[in-house]
Image (cartoon, rainbow, N blue to C red; front, side, top):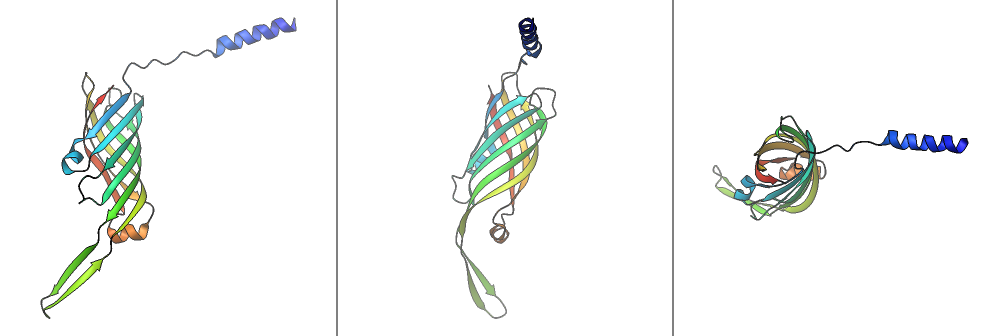
Length: 185
């Protein structure tokens, strides 16, 4: 009798625990490039994985080609929450973390005193360092029926390490934004 009850309980628990898998009726991967940053010489590429209709996670990689930029590299993971009617589209808010590498070149400043006619030369030594920022952003994403994406976003974060260097070189805050074009697959 005990064996029969245990066997029936086991079968009941197996049937009661079975769950239906949620079906996803939209594509969940996006690959995008920041067209605005590409034009100015600092390309940024992004991969985003859509978790559900209202949220997604992703990572952006940004690197400088032009030597004029002090931010040489950044790696930015993010989480987004969407408010649109389409899956992972429309207005969104995001939280992000940014690991960024900065290189500040040496500078020489020339000051001229008109009253005395004296010229003063000031030398500022550059530096290279890595910092970590946390921030938030807002934006909007539009997607066509064929999966082409257009996105506009902007955000601000604060570097948390190297506060003396950031205050001196003016890198306490970091920006994030652009005009992004991509494809959902």
